[in-house]
Length: 220
Image (cartoon, rainbow, N blue to C red):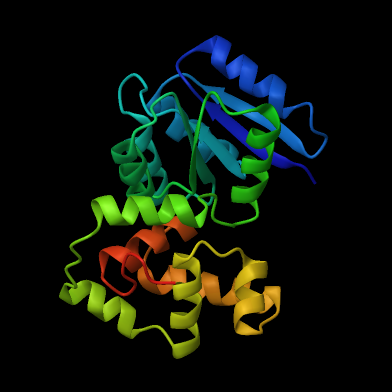
């Protein structure tokens, strides 16, 4: 079955261009479009796409708030932020809201389609260099509060190992190789880590790992 996608952008020409790029691929299918944040939330909750391409600046509620509302509503759609803003602060806010990845609208078509496939299969989109840059700039003074400590305490030792590898930007295959586990086993551990930490995506787990001080900038 194809990966289903919703496109949320306030410019019809942008939506059309994204749709054209994506539907050249036989394994990708655009199932809906939205022009503002509220419409995006309604669309995704109604159609349940695998991936939602979300602009940051949208009329009404912005894309970051739309992602936050989708996560609160229990949506399983992986949110890929597609924006003209090359701004680290936007990126961190989007990841904290529950986005699965972040790309610029100037991205090449082949990289966009691969980004969609990456987040659809549940892998982190950000490479380790980008992740390190972000946490060093924004999360350099971790404060391990009681709630974070309690969440981390729920992790088994193996789940802690998986979280460390996630923080290094590892895919399921890379984590499996590092920890001598099969990919299905890694996937199961990642699911448990996300659930116990109360986060909605792998990259959000990375933010949690650094923000809590479980992993510190420069480690690994």
